[in-house]
Length: 609
Image 1: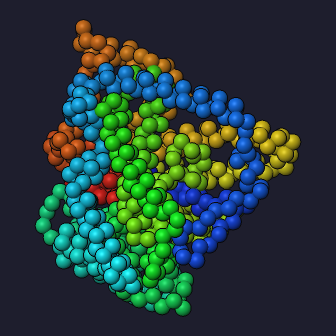
Image 2: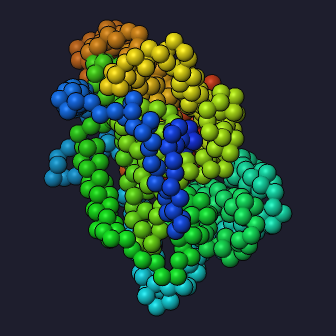
Image 3: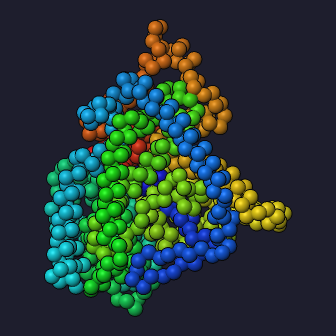
């Protein structure tokens, strides 16, 4: 959605995920090809190239003097360094707070500092689940290479057979049969040639994995019980539905191509994409995997090696960063966060979104490296949050973003130039995004805010095209036009951050950031007065009684006894049946029952790590 997704999220998140819609995903908003831009098709099914027209090259894209850009970069770097210094000092002061004990734990011995382990998703991927990922993907790469060398025309069959055996070995044969039932159902619907029926059946299948009692009944098909069961069940099931829906819609759009059930199974059980995504639409995947003798482009192997190395460096850099900056734990203690200076609080909000982008880029980057070795052109990593200034490009999962754009957003919104069709397109897109994330209060709020932001951009654009304003801008130089638009873009940038903090952290933390930055702006020590009245005499500000926080085990999982209640009171946030929301270190949106969920995988977080 934006994490469109994904609040990833995408969603993570919001995974999600996401991981999760901008003009044209909702982790997370659906991206749009701007007006005046043409798209060059690729006969091999690879991603299209976007070619800006001369008009698009003007205005906001116009080059400014090098000295001016250098000054802007210097100011930005100085602001980030100043905010980072405040965050570093706050992390040092709060390292021994009782509220931090469960999510700030001993880290690498040779660094000699504690580490922020509040994000269970990161812990899951790179500690408890790391060896499983390496083993499964290494086996896929090995068999794919052997098949490509011996019988390249059968490589798509090898992908499907290896993936199906891996799913059956992990989740059991009954789970495999359950997914085959959904695949067959959507395949039969595709034979009728009615797109509305295929989309409706696909959404109904997706809802069956998001809402009780069907979700409880279907989860019973998984054999055995293990820590990763919920993660794999929800990830594999939800992505399977999206892939089968893409196949059905493509079959309706191209009845002359006569796609078979075998084509659907090859597409769905490609292991690198099966559990965690990203999504490739069926037409692109089929065109690329059907090449009998795939040929690598010049420099492609070097690019794959560079991408793999970059992913490893990013993983290590994030781990080192968490030893010095506790950006995931601080938002869970509102009293402590309220005492941060304004610059540090703004940096904390900004760094949370940057981290979510880095996480999505790393997680998808690892999978995409394997896909590139298989001669595929998977969806690219999301655009860095620092380079964003419009909701139309804000998403954390390009795969889900492409899926929503192709089958919902662009289909309804057309060229995205009319107000009413655009409103209908965004509402429909975010409705599906909400279903993907798991309907609950916080997801409703996130969807509404981002849907409003996307439409508000179009309204402002229409206002700027109004005669008097258009003539004023026409009288300006292209450089000055860019400067004026940049002022509005800066405000839009912070709206993007605020709207997505709702899903990445908590509503209370978002309200705190908005109040401090927009209204009070009291700066450093703003919480000391209130804290001094409530703390025992003789205690300094750093020893104030901490807020309650749910206990967790060493892997970052919420303890089942947290707050003395069951899973219905999971500490991420309370949704649907509860009006109040309690901040917590969990950085994941909840599912339909109020349980925390991974924004990239959309599964209950209490069992995910």
